[in-house]
Image (cartoon, rainbow, N blue to C red):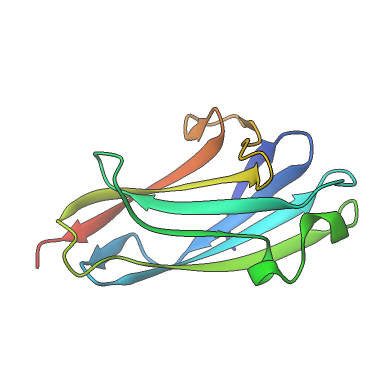
Length: 140
């Protein structure tokens, strides 16, 4: 992950860097995302990360909701200060229309479905998520 950022989710997790394979796709294309998370404190429950690819109408075209590293390293196992690098792949449907898409990233408790609040110094940080993009999808 090469793009530095400082987005904090609750007082538990910080996104320190991310990387995106491409900002230009064709319908049916795949985008690879790498996220570098840091544990800010001991985490007493397992949180699930969400990564959603959405269009301008807020329609979801692909999503990847899972515990870190495909479920193999839950947040309760993280050590304070530890950095976890997670790789996510999103596939755009072959019938997706051209236009600009965004990726939304955040965390939630699977038990309650409650999202962790997001805090950061950029306008791409919303109440409970970070938004990156746009990713431009070309005409077929």
